[in-house]
Image 1: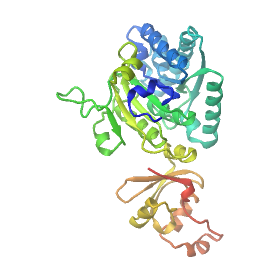
Image 2 (image 1 turned 90 degrees about the vertical axis):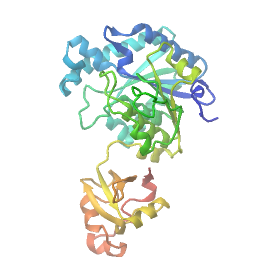
Image 3 (image 1 turned 60 degrees about the vertical axis):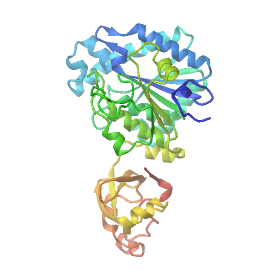
Image 4 (image 1 turned 180 degrees about the vertical axis):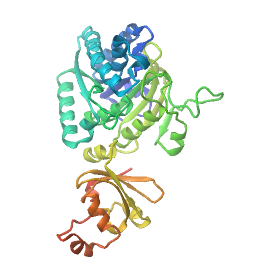
Amino acid sequence: MQIVRLSHLADKAACPRLVVKVGSSLLVGADGVRRAWLEGLVGELAAARARGQDVIVVSSGAIALGAATLRLDKGGRGSLADAQAAAAVGQIALSGLWADLLGAHGLTAAQLLLTLDDLEDRRRYLNATATLTRLLDAGAVPVINENDSVATQEIRFGDNDRLAARVAQAAGASAVLLLSDVDGLFDRNPAQPGATLLAEVRGVTAEIHAMASGGSASGMGSGGMTSKLQAAEIAERAGIALAIASGLHDAPIERACGQGIGTLFLPRRKDAGRKAWLGGRLRLKGALVVDAGAARALAKGSSLLAAGVAAVEGEFQRGDAVAIRDGAGTTLAHGLAEYDALECARLMGRQSGEHGDILGYAPRSAVVHRDQLVLL
């Protein structure tokens, strides 16, 4: 059974494993933790467990909680050092809060703090997958947050929307529910007259991106509609449905699923595990710009040959993930390079028969092999 409407997120047959992301502005208000609201949400999560669904929580809020305790300006986001310090303090309170509330329903909370590298590095990604699988098999509810106390600007998700999509991918989830401070995706700024909530989106296109605004409405979180659309792109390529719904109301899951208020992004395809991981990567080491002939060959499932490479960007080693772009700057694919950047630059535009003489050793069959490449 496939997910084709919001109500299916509360259906065990259609959605045996659900990831629920809770934004900072929902969890923490002007007076501190919104405990009554959170108790209601945990009750909904317990109900999902009771009907046989696995549940994973991706929870923001550590920086906001820690900033309040440390009395830091700008909600703890005035500097990277402030954010790291606030996260270190707030994560203790956040994990304790979830443990207490889930424990009241007889559920065991398990804390996982992840960095971008934990899900971008293939071996660490598989380790995270194994841990999540074992926790769910044991009946625990994983509560996940980015490890903001050690993450830097260069190696962080920066928002929990994309983290939730990557966690769903690693855990083999059926759907992601992003609870936010908006009802979903509107065709224009929802403050404008005539703005219409989109109930369903089939594929995140340039037109869909144009409807988004970047910032967080509350000013407390780090995400916005742009990050949610990026999360939807990660999910849709992995065969995972993603929904955006408002968490500003009591019983937000019931409101979204029972009343159908929100936006559901339907998956476009289901890539195999390795290719889904590769297609969902957020950090790439460089790029290969290809000519029109190579772009057409890639679309037909071919490997990328050096003859079709027109430019090499960045510094990367063999085995690093790179983007493959056309001359207009459109990213066509992600792939694992068979050569380092300097070797690619030496080989680009040259025929395969010349490679041995150029490199001084027996060349590989492609710059990026089709088995290590995923089209976007």
